[in-house]
Amino acid sequence: MEFIDYYKILGIDKSATEADIKKAYRKMARKFHPDVNPNDKQAEVKFKEVNEANEVLSNPENRKKYDKYGKDWKHADQYDQQSRQQNYGGSRNQQQNPFGQSYQGGGNEDSDFSDFFGSMFGGGGRRGNQSKFRGQDFNAELKLNLSEVYKTDKRTLTVNRKNIRLTIPAGVTDGQEIKIKGYGADGVNGGPKGDLNIKFNITNDTLFVRDGKNLYKTIDIDLYTALLGGDITIDTMSGQVKLKVAPETQNGVKVKLKGKGFPVYKKDDEFGDLYLTYQIVLPKDLTDQEKDLFVQLSKLRTS
Image (tube, rainbow, N blue to C red; front, side, top):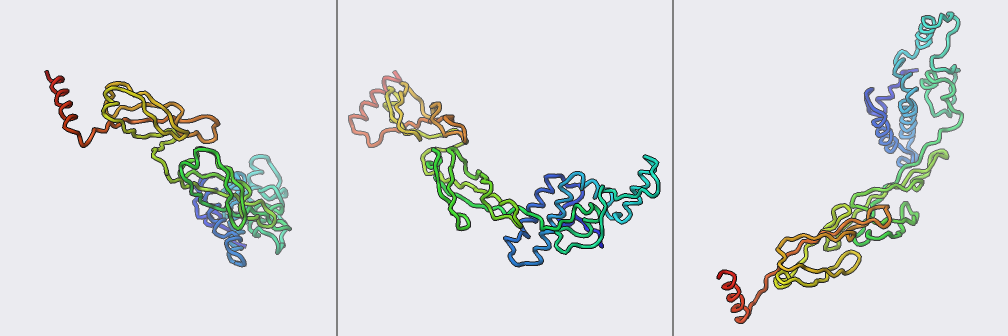
């Protein structure tokens, strides 16, 4: 019976954090999962090794015991006995497995755990029935237009030949991912199903620029409205709005329309703001009369 390096199986070192272990386990489990490698006996063996490594390293107590005895697992009894004698005055005949359970030799061919695991963690680690493993996650990408995510919508997705009715909350962002639990692959040996991860790919089909919950847009106004003031009508995501332009409005002036921006994800009736930038458009193809009037105006301004 050989020592098994669980860190090596997961491709990590002893300084790995719980997050590192979790990430490595998911990567390796996905690689060797039976759903990805049907009828592949070698992948099945690897899958069991990965799950056994995770069983030890993801459990703080198991990991502590494994790190303490490691390659000296064959002499764990002696180490533990010496420790007890020093600390509690125990007798030489009180030998016990340091991991709290006695291990009876003899293999169970149907066990999903190695003899090494059983010798370290006791008979409780060996199972007469096959272990239950979580199913593989499915990943999908959903392409939508910006105008489509302004309001909550329902869509039907076909994933792995199954139709899934999905409610898409207003305000989702480009690149955002959501998880739908239990809509992945079936588990192994009756284990729980995996999840469905959906990533949103949003194309801007509007004249607005979106930045989080706020929208931005440049509005053209003619010279006369800019000089004299007046009313204009603009388009927003929720419909048309009338605005009053103040007299002598300068080019590049910005105004804010509160609550006319984009809806905030999963927050009912909460919206960002719409920021407008005025761009003054100069008249073209002036008539002789218009030119004369502008000449007269320029003389008045310089006199």
